[in-house]
Length: 270
Ligand SMILES: [Zn+2]
Image 1: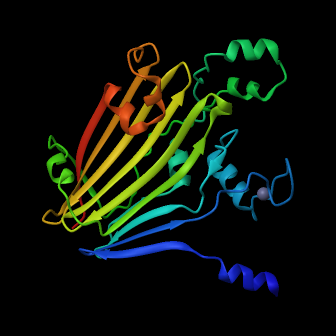
Image 2: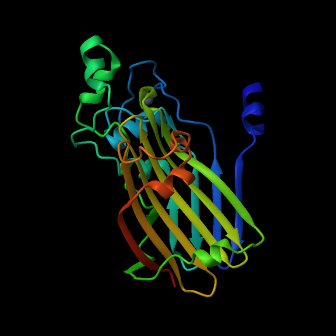
Image 3: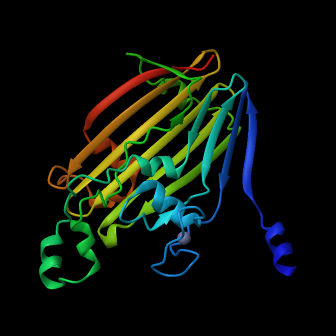
């Protein structure tokens, strides 16, 4: 009985905004427990999986990131039915679970000095850096067309009232203290429209820094959302002249990472 009351009174971090025909909603909660409900190293039956096992079965990754914010979600639903959604399960589906891994700089020494340690898992064939190419989830009501148009930075830099702002982490992993891999999504709604930045940031200490950004900019006078996807990457060697203090600040280091790939499109939703 007591427990029921406690559960009911837990604050739910959730909010929505009706904006120009869109219902914009976010939800935030605790991280996914790292243990199955049946105990350590146990798994559930496929028919009745706990939250952890739901993830394990769906993704078939040998390991999940340290922190999976399985309840964090940003959803934009238009009155016409168009849906744009950001969630950790989909983000992790775009992690390569079959390719040769990239190795940490000290991996060889680790392997020699501690043959039985958990670093061994880094030699299994899956991308333990949790690099994702996730660009958000859309339903069939959205029609995508490539464009040569550029992001309207001028408009985004103008001072405007902020109607709604949220920053959600989808997952994060510290790569056994060898860096960081994170995936997050931010939204800002202003009277002129909304702007979303979905970012995967990867830093493997002494090896490289990678950033996969998907930007969405909707201007209320348009019947489409502008979308830009970029991949940036540089090795530590290429970053020699950059102060290392900036390596931990994605917004700063971004300016020093050359663009390896860029794709722009218009997402029509009407
Ligand atoms: Zn389980």
